[in-house]
Image (cartoon, rainbow, N blue to C red):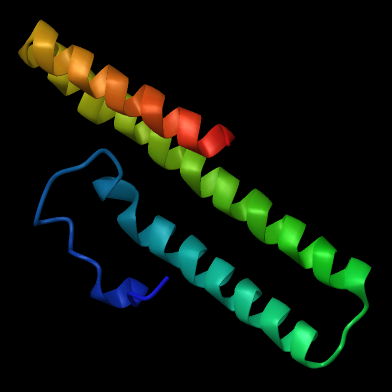
Length: 106
């Protein structure tokens, strides 16, 4: 991730489903960022392979939880609003969400 989390656009730029939980997401992502730095440190210090893999699994699980939360918020807010606006907008948002789910499952 090249962009610092603190430099991401604020909620007033756009109203997305996660806007009300933005600070919680940022805290979780900063914690994950720290975990990744810890993994890099472990590799640099020649830590035991299984210990490193355990930490990688923890980061993957944490990112998965963030992804699922964002997806739930997207469906509950963005998709619902698009469906209410028009059939075409709703279909486009459902397709977008389905594609995102596909990417998460790969």
